[in-house]
Image (cartoon, rainbow, N blue to C red):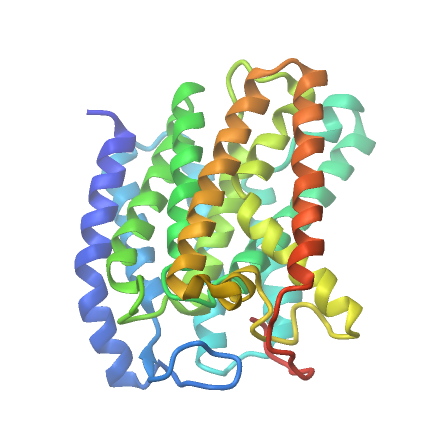
Length: 349
């Protein structure tokens, strides 16, 4: 049996079954998300669901991996653990959001770098120290950016878990085609954990993953993007594959960043109901409809990634350019959609 299938099965069962006791633990220790002006739920919902996903992924890796690339596996799990812990502390109200963004996420990225996991974009074009330093900088920006995008993406029932499961499925497909066992196994484990948790998180949610779960998923998605080496994909366009796979969260972060900046707000420090899903829901789709639309968009971005990986360089860039134009057009149109305006606050979301 392929290790990716083993990892998916173990992670799915573990996440699905552990979410119930984790929910009880959250209620017992008071880890509950209360309704508020920037929230869409109307009753208190337990947090800490990320703990069930964390256990599912770790258990899947321990069961399915045979010790290959042990240093990188340890580094990945160490960074993911740090991201999850920082998120849980933030959920508990014990951390300022700036510590999470400017300390926790960069340190997690540095752990990857020490483990030998980094971007390989500039060094392929400019061999030598300049290219290597540029890739180090790109690695830090990528890990912090993707982790932060997932951190603010968990704002509607089933949204973050479902989109993460879809993205992880495409990472699994690409890694399997490239015969990257570590990447396909990790991606399958993430897919299983997110899918298992989704059983309890889809509307009406019985538990939230919290920032601990969102940061955990974001860090692993960033890691998968760094590790993926698409087979038969032209090197000049291979970097576009993970960007497209994670297109939904990048799209949402782009909209929020542009919209909040235009209103004089700090994008990651002023939470509100101005995300893509909120605007789609206000257009008449409702919360469930908005989430399902973004699931479909996640699948579309994944298919575009498959297209880019199979096209010659020129055509691949042309497809990516058309995708970027479509995204920017959608940002402009959604900027005009109704949303609830917020005041500046000191909490990300």
